[in-house]
Image 1 (cartoon, one colour):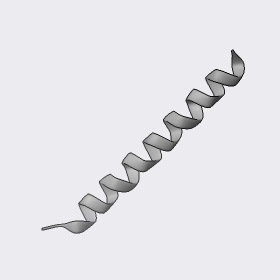
Image 2 (image 1 turned 30 degrees about the vertical axis):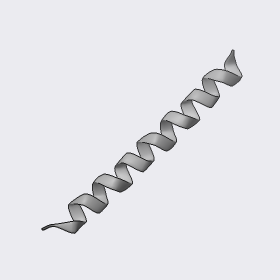
Image 3 (image 1 turned 90 degrees about the vertical axis):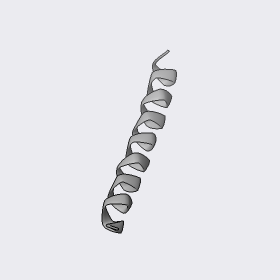
Length: 31
């Protein structure tokens, strides 16, 4: 089992969630 792949996927997922959260707050501020 390649654990690095799962770790990489986890990091990418966290970054996407963080980016989505920042984008939502930016949109909220712009409104």
